[in-house]
Amino acid sequence: MRHHDIAVIPGDGIGTEVMPEALRVLEAVGARHDIRFGLRHFDWSCETYRRTGRMMPEDGIDRLREHDAILLGAVGAPGVPDHVSLWGLLIPIRREFDQYVNLRPVRLLPGITPPLRDVGPGDIDFWVVRENTEGEYSQLGGRQAEGTPSEMVLQVAAFTRRGTDRILRYAFDFARRLGRSHVTSATKSNGIFHSMPYWDERFHAIAAEYPGIEVDQYHIDILAARFVMSPQRFDVVVGSNLFGDILSDLGPGVTGTIAVAPSGNINPEREHPSMFEPVHGSAPDIMGKGIANPIGQIWSAAMMLDHLGEEQAAADVMRAIETVLGSGDAPLTPDLGGTATTTDLGAAIAEAV
Ligand code: GGG
Image 1: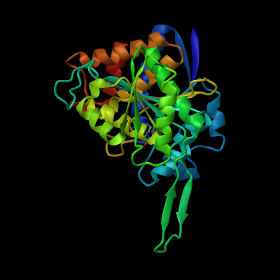
Image 2: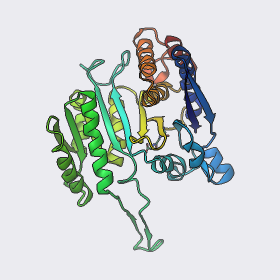
Image 3: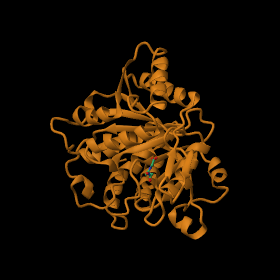
Image 4: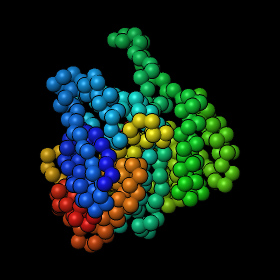
């Protein structure tokens, strides 16, 4: 029997509702493949912040360090500023564990009707590779002359050579590993004077190392339009922290619902645990209603299994998701046009495993 120690952080809002469904599916697939999961639960959240003034304890990172992977739900709650909750939990984990790749698949799943006509399952199938530890997500800057007519805020984006080259190289290696022939770079070098021309320069330098791969680059504004008008044309799209974040919400939106979208915050060198979380947030508007779609969390668990070397188990979870959605009588949650609950859909997927 194989064993993996997993840190489980449901977090806030619907994170606490979708996480049990992912654990239910992990239990089912573990039983099938002789895998034992040592689950350790951490109740770190905005509620912890209200009680203690911190999103996680001071030794939080050290407590996570001893796990093989981290499964996270969602972060954010009304009453706690979003930059406080994100910089208190999600971002420190990404940075301390050097999870510099945020890998986000965009795939149209069977049984889901996309808002676009003439697109079916298999037509939209690409990956966003988002830089995850620097760029526009930065604490560099500050406020000046507060409360005066000259009040000014500076926000500095930092792009290092190491950080830029390694995410670009990851995107090309990943495309090669998948057998995909095309890497697209998101830029805005016509308006952003320093960082984006540098990004373009490094993109072309790294592309030269991969002669078999076709490349193109688009400014983020037209790239967003192309995601909507022709999502079929992409294989791997690489972007900075902010551009990758936006594109990886837009992509799943084009497939019909962001609620199914998963992500992996990956430390490719495996020196530290990687973290897996749905792309969606804590959705306070539907929390407590039991209607959140658990597929983003379950698919994130499948990405975690794949990362842990449990490829067959990961494939079985994906097959179960696709079988249930494609069955024609799936218990669909309201975001997919149904009336089923989070538990109905999670239980159906666990059963299909
Ligand atoms: N699933 C985790 C979560 O709550 N994400 C919401 C969010 O705002 N994430 C920002 C980011 O991915 O940088």
